Length: 166
Image (cartoon, rainbow, N blue to C red):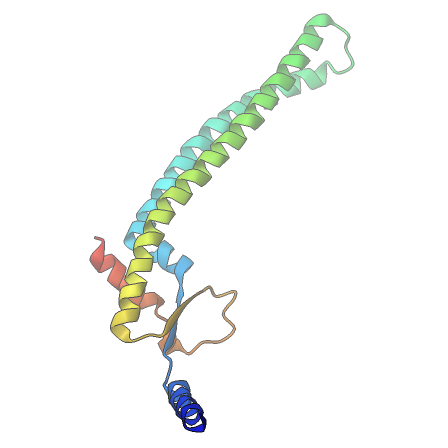
């Protein structure tokens, strides 16, 4: 039994002495830097601006109506009260549309970026296997306290991704 324990101990120590190769990738930076990520962001920005323009126009109309209503504040005229109620209704509708548009943009962004993320994880796995890495961590500049530059695989991931997914 002593010989078996000694063999396990010696075998375990040689494994512990084997050098582990660890790399890291700023996945967010990589996603936003690859060509596909840039195209996705440009398309999302275009969609956002179109929706923002529509909402701004509706907001402008409501502001004009509010300014008119403010001039008649305190009036008990049924027509004015009806306009105030109509304003409140339109304001609530605009808020609901804003929330709906925001949710749609978030879903669209998530859909676009999750497809890129899936492919990027495959690219990272290929780099890890080819480079003999034991572990590749996902980091971002706010969480990485220190890392040797040669262990940062972000630029390599970006290059390989752009080459694979033109």
